[in-house]
Image (cartoon, rainbow, N blue to C red; front, top):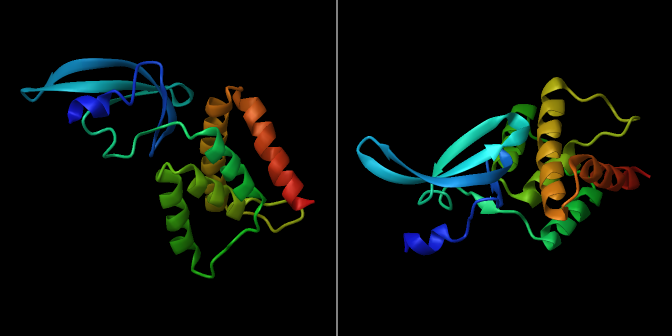
Length: 169
């Protein structure tokens, strides 16, 4: 069973790791850890200058996934056009929900956070924590849009901005 799971991810594949967003599999290596022979994906997150080693048999379980399909990216961008849905709950509870959505690694959930926290210039100021969550979600969304569409981050950023601005108009 573990043999088939492994085939999903290969070196040079871009993958999405829930807690860190888009990374690239550099290699698959074997290491002995505490007397156990483990096979690990070596994933590089260039932007964060970080490398993760993820046991191959745990990858799917922890939510590592391939990049979204172009269809999902289109849906995510459509989501941005929607009206912001802001619950009346206290900020601390909403912030927790936003954070869970961002760390779920699910592109549509991340797009919902961007949609709900996006502010146009004439709207009230964002608090520091709102801004942090918004930027984290925006960055995850932009990186995946870039990786899927094969454009650079600036191009993806522009595509996302265009959708957000069209919504405001």
